Length: 114
Image (cartoon, rainbow, N blue to C red; front, side):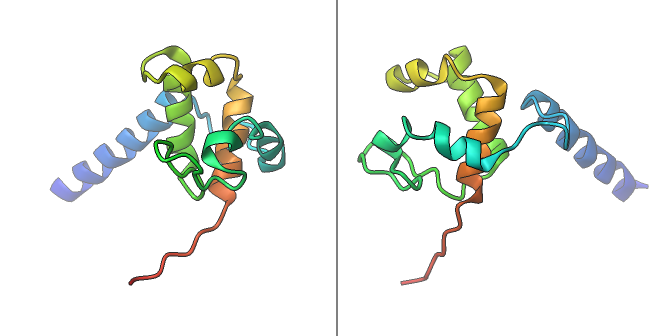
């Protein structure tokens, strides 16, 4: 019984997280090609393939789409503060955010141990 309760809590938390991120399932637009086109402004700091060219900008390539979408929404709403990102994210629609997240998440990276 204890295990079933834990699984139910994990499932509920996942559903709540998806709803909080504004995702409603497969019906949400996720067009990586449209995201790539929209990412031209992002390339100035984050590089054309999501590998940062600025020392204070994170790499976006291969980040989970849910994480990227959540962060962009937080910048757009002002919940997450950054002078440049606030200006960049403010005009983004939900569809733009989903497409940008899909683009960066679709980029494959390979990590090798030293």
